[in-house]
Length: 600
Ligand SMILES: Nc1nc2c(ncn2[C@@H]2O[C@H](COP(=O)(O)OP(=O)(O)OP(=O)(O)O)[C@@H](O)[C@H]2O)c(=O)[nH]1
Figure (cartoon, rainbow, N blue to C red):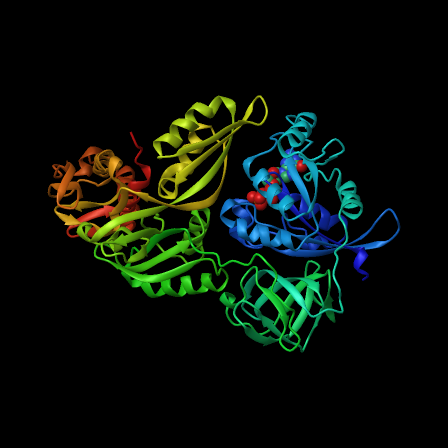
């Protein structure tokens, strides 16, 4: 295939605006999907993704399209993840393209992540053209949304394709635009190999599969390649493309996109953003922009049944095979026993991993409240990082602590601005800007401490704005903060898994609310239970769960046996999630109560 007949493109969109559905239409139209394969949203590989309707792993498909000019074009569709936690993967996938389709839901308009992604694409010098999707919906307002795209993003939208991915409207027009608007790749097949590794995953049978965009040069089976970031070399065993099934090709050359299988055992060695070259005739320099992704959010995962520890360890190892951005290490908690401290890119990433562990591996887990990475400066000048309250040294050894800040862009209809400002202020935010994008849509920009955001920010945002807000964030810097460790004690015993790092000004209110919330959650037992919150030795709040007086079953008047059984079953169900702390049984919800407490 001649290089000027290749088009490499991505689809960028806010979550749920129809990216995957549109990708399916393109596959279908170009005949890449046989009827048998025509299950909805082919590109979302994992069941969980399908269920939640979100895309996690980037995936690439090669389509062949005969355009109106009578020529065949190879269109490489590079699927990108849509969520803020995966921004780095998005930006790397975009680097593999020359153009991007900007899909905007014609009934919703431009959202925060539309903007974030479109700016990434513009920064990468991609040709971006808009597609208004869901025009079949009665609520679609294509003219308004076109105007919004021009006003807010500043790209021409007057001849944007009107499409319905659901009904297959506009598919051919989109394919024609891809051919006519997106430039063919540049690149020299004769130069030394320089290829961008933009995705990798572990396959049980073939080992690690890497997706590459060849910038210059050619790669073939049998050649020795070098991964430039870690200097590891491998022999290429297979070269191919996804069409969408895996299909071997003799070589991949400048401008093309495809996969390599090279006996790489560990997905950790094939990092997104790395440059692939030949071992013996390497390119002069790696491609710019490579960075190690580091987990930003941490949480402890513990099996409820200690006998499941080994199972949990195996499951984590399996997940790690396919996700180099996720980390874990063993941790012990006095309260919860043996478990793991896990690191995630963000909250969504954390939720996905936790859910997969429970669902795919059948594990019952207790998860501790998420935390971030703090920098502790000790008296004497030593600095180290901690990601759990239990790693915090005694106060007398601490000079000061720094916490990570993010720059959050919140996109909301104007009637919710007041609520958003109040929320951001409550979360110790520093206002940067309030921008009216249109008379009814506002962008609120705040600097926020990440530790406040990981607690319940998303949920609060959603409830304040009835789901109409969208959030995007980037890491900013570390700032000095008055942070303290707050302990929760049950009958005098510190429950280490409930300790948290908190701003001093908020400790009193948070402590008081937390113990009262826990009082509601801890079922009465045969004895009195004292719940206390303390900073150091100072108790700042206390509640008591009174001892149980009478049999709960007495309520059933002894008569109705089915009701009685139901009640017992319900209790049993609840028991499954209980963890004994000393002689007190604590339900899982108690460990999450930290998340639910609202600041005053
Ligand atoms: N009415 C209508 N619904 C659509 C259209 N396109 C997609 N949808 C629906 O919108 C929802 C989201 O579509 P997806 O294709 O999963 O959206 P996505 O952008 O890929 O979402 P993420 O993978 O989460 O980024 C699904 O319920 C689709 O059936 C359309 O043209 N019209």
